[in-house]
Amino acid sequence: MRLGIIAEIHANLPALEAVLEALRKEGIDQVLAVGDLVGYGPHPRQVIRKLDKEGIPCVPGAADLRVAYALPSPAREGIAETTIVWTREQLGAREMHFLRNLRSRHRYETPGGRLMVFHGSPEDPEHKIDLNDAHPAEILKMLESIRSRYAVVAGKHIPFRRVVHKGVVYDPGSVGLSLGGEPGADVLILEDDIHGEVLHRFLKVPYDYGQVTFDLAAWELPEVLAEVVRQGRFPK
Image 1 (cartoon, one colour):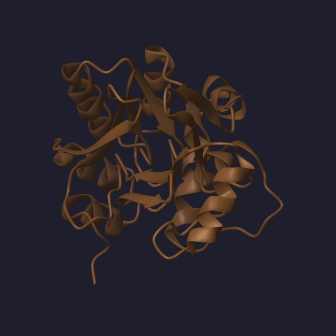
Image 2 (cartoon, rainbow, N blue to C red):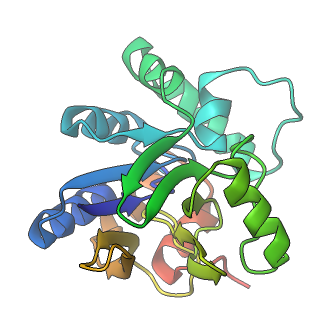
């Protein structure tokens, strides 16, 4: 099976449409969306309806849960909380129902072992695992806890892969708010090889970010978001 894994769409419809078209051309069997479908961007309703229409399995991210529920944890600071409040105001009952009924994880069995897909950490979408700096024992403990050889862990907005002994962890990066220093939408492709191993490939998909920046300005959302979309990083 060939999986196309996307994450951190952040209500960016042109980016989502571009990656779905790119994945169709790649002949992907299944697309998965790994959290933070909304938040920050100007198209929350359209993104949710597109994912629903396409029948794409999704897991929730921290932003999705904060939009869908009045969580008891402290509110985020700055532009994150501003855009969450705005996003909640844009969604109707249909979209809220979609967010509130997402599964926290998705699991796939590959010839080489189980693949688990989630946002943040296995227990909490808001708790981000630092895949780069974590001690190898911490990565192995996490994989053991979810009884998986492979894990897709979204949350850092930067494409990443790390091998720890026989375990492998990936971050697919971000479709709508990439922070890797290059504009465009990040995509992760996973597929089985003839030896039962999982092969990976990261794509950077260009899209018309002019429409996104125009809509951000039209809705009077924080100006810095347009700079992030144009530059692929927060301005210094």
